[in-house]
Length: 154
Image (cartoon, rainbow, N blue to C red; front, side):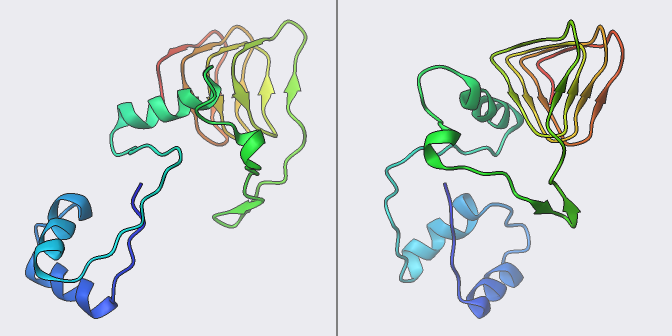
């Protein structure tokens, strides 16, 4: 986990002198530790670096996995009622007759008529009849068409 707080002038100066710097953890922080006064706070809870596609996928799978690494209910996690100007207060999720869902996190406003296994569905996702999602992360308002087969997708 990285939460960085910088003096604006310090950060601008660094970025102007290091135009190829792409990563705080690799480019800025090590040099700052050597040259300047740096403070850190040890965090002793769950965190994951999601800087790669694989790591992002794994972190999402930990939400629905067994073992209790992530517990949105216990942590009091609530969805953001408004994001990017779009009100996310959506109707309840609808499950059509014959739909199947196993070990998945299904957000509000989803309509599921197919099969969803070990997957995370963001608000407004539509899973058409005959579609099968396995081990996948589906973003907001995505439509999975009839008879689509999606395995290990983001």
